[in-house]
Image 1: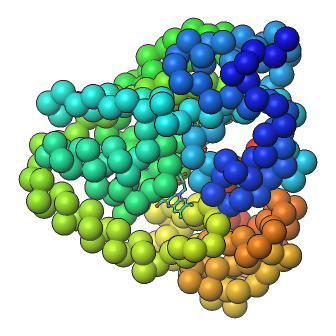
Image 2: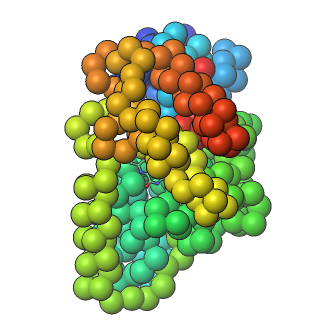
Amino acid sequence: MIPQFIKINVCLKQHCTLKIGGLADYFVEPETEEQVTEALAFAKEKALSYFVIGHGSNLLFADEGYRGLIIKLADKFAQIEINKNLITVQAGAWMPYVARKAQQAGLAGLEHTVGIPGNIGGIITMNAGSQRKSIATHLKNICVMTEEGEKLMLTPDQCDFGYRQSIFQNKPWIILYAEVECELGDKNQIRSEMREILKERRLKFPRKQPNCGSVFKSNPAMYQQYGPPGKIIEDLGLKGYCIGDVCIAPQHANFFVNTGKAYSKDFSALVTIVRQKVIEEIGLDLESEVLSVK
Ligand SMILES: Cc1cc2nc3c(=O)[nH]c(=O)nc-3n(C[C@H](O)[C@H](O)[C@H](O)COP(=O)(O)OP(=O)(O)OC[C@H]3O[C@@H](n4cnc5c(N)ncnc54)[C@H](O)[C@@H]3O)c2cc1C
């Protein structure tokens, strides 16, 4: 018997910003920790693999879909509590909303995250950030549920944080909530910094066509030697190049956009072509930031 809260044959296109992907055999949106435990028990009983998603803004789902259970923490799994300079936030909370809540409470440090379209669980997993910053610097504790349904409280030094990297990309753990430690700041100053960041992002990034943000990772050493991936790709004359309905965005060459009915196989083929060209021309192997879910 399939528990009532588990759906079958759910279209993954609807659950990622790229709007690419086939059907997931099983799909669940837990609203409580108990439901997360039940979802894990269901996966175990049926010997299913599972994959947890947030807003799906850094994911490439396969055209063939996913043979297992997709667990999406969102909407209802999004409580936020602020106590002095400590924000306790559930994994499904929307990052830009958390950043604004921090600003309203006069808490500084999350300004750089105000335009990042992800949920806290995804932001921590990707160690996301902008302005050459990352969320990890403001994390105090991260509470996860293991595949056995056991709860663990981790400190950042147990999470292998690196540039857009964390232990959560390699473990089947589900982030439940995190404690984020901010600095006391001036509300107006924080707000105007956020506005500046949002203004800059609106000018730089494609806004209308589905995409998943930066396709390739930039890191400080690469940035210093070659510049950001967008510039490297643009300098090779690849802006606007398409395979099927996946195109290198005319606005920003590190963004690939879905111009209609894009397929995962075309996205992957474009990634391969760009990587090969960059290796041939400058001897640098670009690393993908977007995660493939198969
Ligand atoms: C227009 C645009 C702009 C972007 N700009 C930026 C930017 O400036 N900086 C940046 O760093 N990124 C950026 N991104 C990429 C993306 O928003 C981030 O990587 C974000 O952190 C992904 O969050 P998500 O909730 O969408 O996670 P998803 O894409 O759903 O998942 C990403 C990873 O997190 C894992 N995950 C999600 N929730 C949980 C959980 N509760 N427990 C355990 N694992 C979990 C997934 O398994 C997956 O491995 C951008 C994307 C877009 C579309």
